[in-house]
Amino acid sequence: MTSFRDLPIRRDLREQEPYGAPQLSVPYQLNVNENTFGIPSEVSERIVSRITEVVPKLNRYPDREFMELRGALAGFLGNGLTANNVWAANGSNEVLMQIFQAFGGPDASALSFGPTYSMYPNIARISLTPYQELARLDGFALTADYVASEIRKAKPNIVILCNPNNPTGTPIAKDVIAAAYDAFDGILVVDEAYAEFASDLSVLDLLPGRERLVISRTMSKAFAFAGVRLGYLAASEAVVDALRIVRLPYHLSTLTQAAALAALEFSDVMLANVEQIKIQRDRIVSELRGMGLQPYESAANFVLCAGFSDPAGTFTKLLDQGVLIRNVGIPNALRITAGTEAETDFLLAALRQTLS
Ligand SMILES: *Cc1c(COP(=O)(O)O)cnc(C)c1O
Image (cartoon, rainbow, N blue to C red):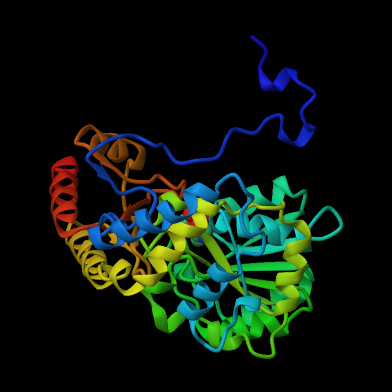
């Protein structure tokens, strides 16, 4: 049996491992920030009926420009956006990859502020884009002065800011994003994967007049649609045109388009549990604090918590009780997704038992 390392694989990939959190079939899966509420039955029915409509036409390639879906996504985002301002792919990871393919590459560079989403360095590597992650300030905060001065020094082609930030939950104030934009002439990507949990943080309203601003979104988190793989972005028409150069033809299947269109007809239903999830998130923060741990305030649907003397041990003991959380590699810290009230009850009881 030949290892992939024995093949003539790209030298920079030879020592890599496939990226991904453990996928384990346990009763409490609180590790990848999914919306743990299921799909409401009225939405399931609409998805099935829209898919039934397109199945006889699956001999044909999908609509390559997926204008109907882009229009529906623009309508969902509001802010005067049209289909021409929207682009989508199979998850926002693919959207981000296309941004790096179009605006990065070996002659360019990308910058972010960590700890942040661990796929950024991966996407940079795969797209051969040199990537630098500068430290955040105390409490993982970012200020306009700090971000702008570091961007001016580094002169990157791409800056990517995650708002609210994964894995820390930290919000970024609007003036920081505006200052970042003004500090260079490259592409500023704001990853709003968790925006629906903190709608006042979204910078969609900064788009007019900012041709190099890209706002990345996903249906995987608040929208409870991770299995469909639908990520999207809002930007100037020029940015969208650039992405159409690097996208593979027909990258978004007819089935994906049909399912996403059905779900968008019911966006209020799909997002109905957001407030409940925020209540559980805040409850996790206060209960963990009561256990003597140091949770960070979060604007997303997860909580990063420090103060674990043995995070790997706690992770394993929770897993033994059927609770899967995430060890994100931050010293003494673990990340927990906020789910239903019942899931939170079980998680907190299991954690109490683990720590006692
Ligand atoms: C989950 C996540 C994404 C990617 O989600 P997709 O499922 O690929 O849409 C992007 N950015 C951040 C910060 C995330 O946490």
